[in-house]
Length: 279
Length: 279
Image (cartoon, rainbow over all chains, first blue to last red; front, side, top):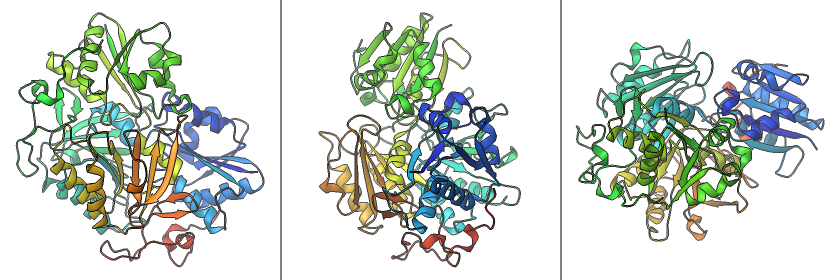
């Protein structure tokens, strides 16, 4: 029986790959992935058949995986982050389903979760996603811009922390401008915004900025943009979203951000402090 | 110099822990965590000082970590999932800040990302979060219910895939009922809903249900609820959200779900299929 292992290997350093992701790559006969992804795991794939494709050839990758697995081989479809987030997992299933495959048929499919950009980038910024958060891809290649814009509007209104994936490419430059415009209708111009490029890779770059200044910085294909909610604050270079709201929190008024330290005073948040050290 | 390592070890099996999470626990002198979390890494902590606390004592845990690190020790604050998602990362920073700590001061803090429930549970269900998604905690312990309800409403309207964390506890039983009620105003009753309990642990339980039937199943403290968007479909037991929308997609009309296989026909999605296999 053939096998397709859909592997998310996390941000790209061996340190932040799971044991199962590493093992899955090692036990595969063939590796399929976008060029950049294959390069990130090159230490693990010596002697294996490797199929590299360009960035927009996701369907081809899934088809190649299905073809190879049909010959009885174990094939790893690799990508950075989590393969279930705007990734290859769904596409591999869709290609198999199109060929009449049912669960339990040959090939066997295993999706192996990895650390997605929202979480790897957050860890480098401080603790920006301690409260309800969403991921929105700004790519309108497969999704109409009206759907994306409506999501940005909804997320802004409902005070989600927002992680933007695929914020900008060489040709696609206006979506991030429009996103900022929508967000500024709902959030304070000084809302913290973190820009993280190539997290945990040699060219890692972390920029702490604000909603009003974010476009003054380099934002590209490899950047994840994390936009704080109404309570997110900076302490030195750390971007922190408290995990709760003050009881009197109101989504429609401004000036609710607590200064560092204020949250842990018993008079502000009596419910958050528990007696006893628990040791 | 003391160190606090805030470690998210993923769903709870050694397989899905990152190399850095494992190493961080191993290099620590002391381990602090909620009882259940400490149990999940018991193989790694023999001979170390261990501080176990109850579930609601998060602030105490952060304070104990700060106390211990001030004596020059390396302390791991461990939790399942990602420590930056409704977790200990922000709280450790807040407790340090309350004590006058600044970035660069003693102790050094490192947040180590882990696989959060939305991603581990999705991998078990199929590929339900291939498109824009959000996480919402239904706990109104620190957040007013009005804020939470508004987020559910916004996420439902804007067609996000939704992962509900902390959906229900012994005393807190009505939030999930109210959530279903809100969602049914915007989504089809047969929208796929996945319930995953104890992902990748010995007592793992995966239930595939629908929005209208979800409350007929056991939902508890350890359950993550994943609600599909308007395009999510079941194929056998697999819950799959396609990665794109048909060009004519309209958020306000019903009956948009594509049947399995339909998406990959060139006449439906000409932009998604690329010539050539890329080998």
